[in-house]
Image 1 (cartoon, helix red, strand yellow):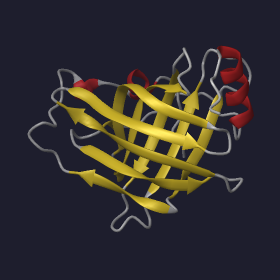
Image 2 (tube, rainbow, N blue to C red):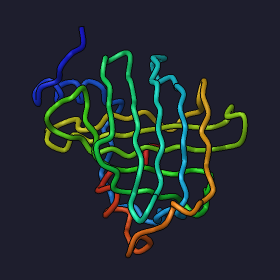
Image 3 (cartoon, rainbow, N blue to C red):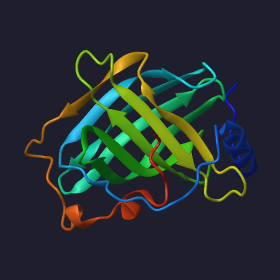
Image 4 (cartoon, one colour):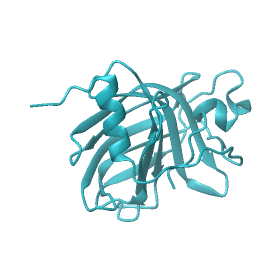
Length: 189
């Protein structure tokens, strides 16, 4: 039987899922990514050895941020799906990775949570690729964060794709700052 989260159970679950309190500080250096896109799927093991599966894609298309994902935490019986993509960015010193930011829903709960996901394409066939995610249920007090640190895939592949005619930026796309795309969420390093 699937668990249906309420606002209170979501807050309690997110607090119990948090691996560590993550300080909220300003970040610099990350900028809007080139207008390309990234796709991937697979699984990683958390620090405690439990599995997290994911399927994700993101980038910019036709002048807007674009993407979707599905993350399943088997240990805690939750599924998170993207509702809106608000950012697509990268560190110019590490061009193999992309962060996708936005709002998501956990187990069809009424309220949305903010997320920041990292996908790193480190060559084929994907044995060195990496995934991480942090989510922030800002409506709760205490341990607000759930985090899977960026870690090597145990199975799957991530693929960075070159721009094509549909991957065009919108007006002001490259002037956006990190906090405008991802709020105060830290990278899931």
